Amino acid sequence: MSSHTNNGRRRPTLRQMVETYLENRPSDQSRSSSNDDPYSVVSMLLNQLQSSSSLDSNRLDSMVELLNSLGDQMDPGSATKGVDDAYLDQLDRVNIKHLSPDDTCPICTNEFHNDPYPLVVRLPCNKNHYFDLDCIGPWLHLNKTCPLCRVDVTKKKEIVLPSDSEEEDDYDEMYG
Amino acid sequence: MSQLPKRIIKESQRLISDPVPGITAVPHEDNLRYFQVTIQGPKESPYQDGLFKLELYLPDDYPMVAPKVRFLTKIYHPNIDRLGRICLDVLKKNWSPALQIRTILLSIQALLSAPNPDDPLSNEVAEHWKRDEQDAIATAKEYTRLYATEQ
Image 1 (tube, one colour):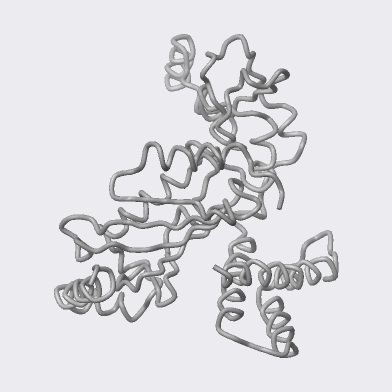
Image 2: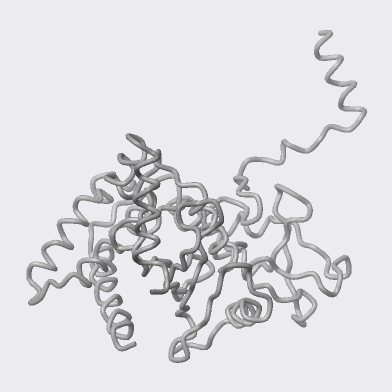
């Protein structure tokens, strides 16, 4: 399986190229769209490849794969929009005493009770959608969606069903 | 190599002890993030009676990013290209860290039962599918016979 080992070695090299590029590109607070322009990344990659000695098909495949993943990252609907630490800080904590011994974190799949100091948080989408903070944090930094139901967790908890008294309020408003 | 996360170990064990029907996934002994996968062609699909080999790789960031999966066996399918790359939402923008290797492989198996020429990766195949579905299915069956069947 030497070919796979070779692939594994080659990929980081390309990734390094991109990382170097991303680090060195003009840093602009306002994130002007031209800096994130996929075409500039493509042309950079092509230059790198042209200057490298060999261009075999494996290498080309790796590049295409890399470009695809870059494309995903640049899709403004996905990875560019995560939450900040302040959001994570305000998530509801779940008391470990309320969790059954075989309750597992959907991300790491370990039992919450296995951790001597578990820190479990609940997402606003559903009271049963809870995770290790250490697991959900890195995900939410990059994505705004609940891993279990894909609901945008930054949309406020307005989905909470109104209690009886609120229904009466609604009636009053309609009347008004 | 960094230590293998517990989740990957558990997933690997369960794939072997409690395999998904029609699917095998075995980690490579030299690299436990690299799996050799087989998927049986679903019944009543053009891939029936075929056994398809795939490779699956868990990147360092898994499960924050999706596994990388590719068909090794040649297959005629509008959402799978010549290099075996798969166009499937859960492998890209709909990936979630609550998904697992087994759920991803199930989705790929389902994709074989339900080709989607309106969201193609392989344009030629998709156009063939839309122009003359019966003929495209015949080609897919022929590919299955030629490349995915034990000779």
